[in-house]
Every structure is written in C-alpha cells, then in structure tokens.
Image (cartoon, rainbow, N blue to C red; front, side, top):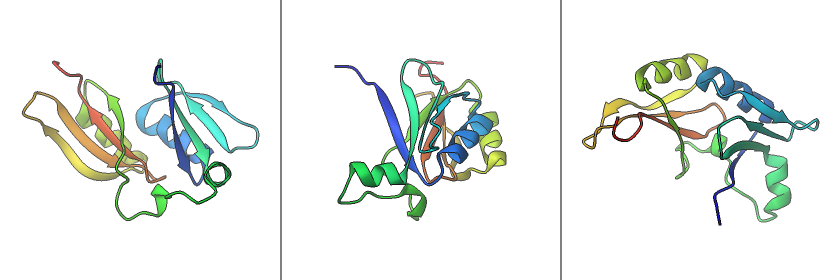
Length: 130
C-alpha cells in the first residue's frame, strides 16, 4: 500500500487551483473540461480538488463543506518551504486568512497556518532538521 493522493472538495475547482498557483507557486497539472476536478504538480503525491457536486455523488449521505465551516476541518495540507514567513505573506496577499502566524517550534521547525478561500487548512513549515 502507498499513499496516492489527497482530494479536497471545494465550491470552485478552477478558483482553488488558481489560488494555490498564486499563493504557493504550485503549477496546475490538469483541470477536467467539466471544471469539476483538477490537480496540481506537487511531486510524488497528487493534491487534487473536486467540486462539491462530485462529493455529493460519492457521499449520498452528504459531506462537510470546509468553506461553510466557521472553523477549519481537522485535516491540513502541509507544504514545506525554507522561508515560512515569506510564503505566509504571499498566501495572505493571494487571499488566505491567517490562523496562526509563523512560529518557531521547540523541535526546530518554523510553522504557520492559513485558511484558504475554499476553506482548506494549510500548514507552512520548514523541513525537519533544517
């Protein structure tokens, strides 16, 4: 078994792809013609976005829309960067909301948390042991 991908269900797939491109510099790999599914270039593991309509097909009993929740969901997307403070500022300028400013952690990482316009929670962190 290996980890294949993460799919984030969002109100507007193209808008989420554009935000992640602008805020985090992750290039778009693919956007389906329907506009309901897209992927970013993130390395070995794919970060994808799917429209809530697809979520409704996959989960007939419903699912939580992160964009409609006042609080972030209990899951995050972690992005590793050498300069958390600059990446944090760039994301805020692109439309993210600050959850926690960059902070040096006791184990040596610098970490910050942001909420994206689609409601997803992103951790920005330096590499472990850097």
